[in-house]
Image 1 (cartoon, helix red, strand yellow):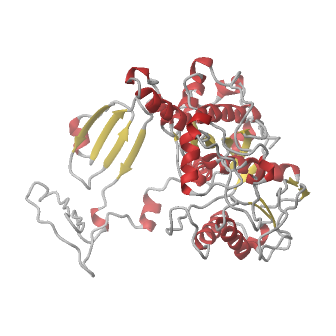
Image 2 (cartoon, rainbow, N blue to C red; image 1 turned 60 degrees about the vertical axis):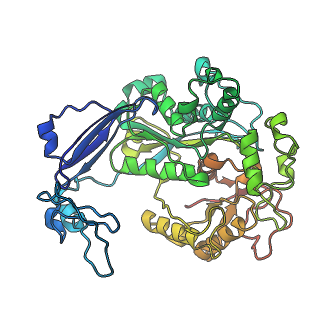
Image 3 (cartoon, rainbow, N blue to C red; image 1 turned 90 degrees about the horizontal axis):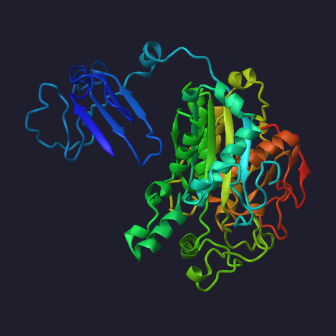
Length: 495
């Protein structure tokens, strides 16, 4: 990794960027706060980033000066080279904050741009029950990258990357992005945001085993192929897409986080086309053992006594026999693996190329319980706040929502808290129907939201919602009239 940097005073016009060589002279950079240029050889395709800041001395009380409690720092131009005395802020003490008033910022700097609408034009999945978006277990048994990933890469890549690349290319194929269409795309306006909760666990685990013999036995790509962003990077290299490219890792919320951010990238005008979603492949000894140690796996799961010797054996033969969301005697989740990817496009861009449109993205929200590492907040307020913010951001009324594809992991506290939050927000709607895709495919970790987004879009497209299987003895307090039964049901999905 090569890094170059030039620094000059804070609180003047500034740029911070990486990924390309600096072309400005030191004199020009001195008028800006700083410029940082780098070429990250581990990022896959030398990813670039750029940040822009502007002067705002006239907008805060302590002009040219900012103090932080503890060590403290001062950025006054006239004193920046003078010895500094650490200061500690006390209650009521004024703090300098470099913020521009919202009104003036909007008037002076915000570009004039009408609201861009985002639509879904393609879907791709790799799941334990099928490898296309129109057939939605745990471990994936029959999977081939033939026709999707070059053999020279498939031999060295981690499985999560293989799932990601395959699902991503299937989403493109489903969206009608052929080689001919691809040639007409502005590649600088095409981006990829596909994340992973755990990244390349298998390639890293194999590297550790190889290291027991010698570092010379290690896969030379073990470090880059273990990072969560490498899947997006390799797909971009394959497609030649030069737009926004990175990954987000937010555990089970990874796919939703990626989809929301990808949509916002299009809304802001930074891209016209985005592949987004998630992928994970954690069914290996260290991955399975980690979840066993957390005590979150279903006790009905058959765990081999010697995980290392038995490789990726992880569960009883039939997943349908024990994964049971909202069941009274549920006792934990079942780990799955796979990928779910959406092709998002700006509406006018999609219409111009004659793409089929499955659904429209309206909005979303991200929140945090700020309560416990694995347990939801007892009153479910984190989920309630997230739902309410998403509704407000989307401009959707509660009564308009008549279908929810729930997270529902089959954990003791998680399912009930989520159900309570859903009833709190949508319980007044007699048409509300709730199901969980995990009842049929297990918990795909970072890929869960992507696959469930595909299931939700399919419900909108076809008018059918898939069943909740194994729901034979529901939890007390759960209204079964809200839950989809053991067979798929007809539903005219509104939102």
